[in-house]
Length: 288
Image 1: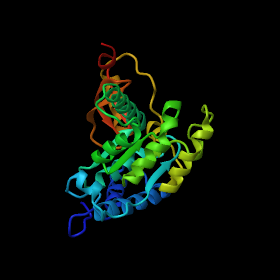
Image 2 (image 1 turned 90 degrees about the horizontal axis):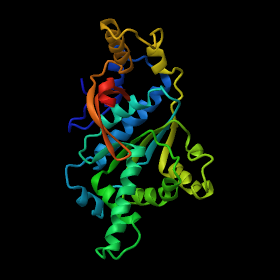
Image 3 (image 1 turned 90 degrees about the vertical axis):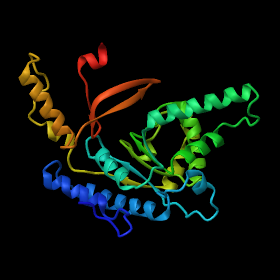
Image 4 (image 1 turned 60 degrees about the vertical axis):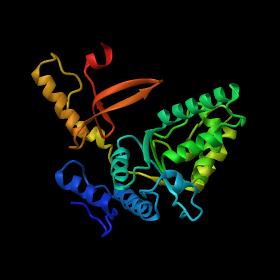
């Protein structure tokens, strides 16, 4: 059952889906998660009502003089296994728009660097006179998605660290709303990194333009779901296969797995079964 407004926009959709998962036994109700759920419900409703989920062209929305002021994004951080991916799943579904993108942060930055490289090649060839790649790259990203959802937001590479401030400033200025999950609080991003002082303004930008929320769930749900299950299964017989099926089903929270493609260092990795941040492979899938 979807909870909808008369015009079809999502209202309390995430809370309803969350409670359905609780009732089905897929997850346990957690107070810290519910705080995030209600916040994301409000954000999804705002995005849908304000036109970030409009059916018009992205270009028209981007340059329309009277476009509504976008809401703040959200930065959700918490330790592994607290339910961040599951909540992002529900939020992304609740926003009714074709102009949205969900991507692992590492993959996003690889894409950004690829675009920067292509821009510089065009400059060398004389096709472009401008020498600053950040504004046009940010503009292209904003045309493609008004909402960008990042999984596993983390910064470890100096090449990323040195451009994030200008890149995200440009994205925010174009009205892009960012929602991210991370294992660390913003103040600890790129901790110990080279020239970190130059990175600190980016942290200030995140705190200014996004609502930072800690998911302080009481339980590591992944470990709880695996509680009591053996780690190794020998021999690789039918019993072993059934045990792996059970473990995967527990970690997936009862959701239906789907195939997906991951881009790792420029290479496409086909994942035959993926759900709730969990992937399942055979030896042949990865090594043959």
